[in-house]
Length: 115
Length: 109
Image (cartoon, rainbow over the protein chains, first blue to last red):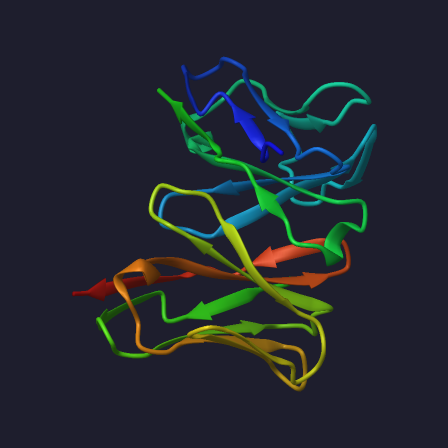
């Protein structure tokens, strides 16, 4: 059973470009969470999704950031018009249908560098 | 707003010494989870505590959840070099998990 997969593992973008980060949850998991981690800091919650639904996006910046988890395919975190401050590691985690009461399985992360 | 603080931020110990990290929330938590992240790696789940005053053990690790469900601690007995990493608590309120700031543990052989 493959774990949570994220791609790309490393992404370099110039200011103003778009970044698309993908997350495939573990088999059987219908809940996906996205977190951002700045160097030497903890994980900051961004968004919590189920298939085709955003459950909680209170941690997402109001502009330029969006997330989706379609019926088919991976969850996507999209950052438009990236700025240097967006440089961080973005982790995706998944959990079984019981949601928040279960452990979260983290992917290896996507390390975004904005030049 | 909701905050989960951890202390200390960094801890260096000699191999064989004990280590404790403390997690404090500004509000009551539904449950608390602990994760370990190795340098360059991703967080890995260690344990979940749900009940007030709950204590759980995993070999040399002891986890506690406070009576008021606002604080928690992780204690490692007789640290080993394999314990190196950053330990995060994550407390749930409502729909969100709030991760603590983490405690980075260095074990000196």
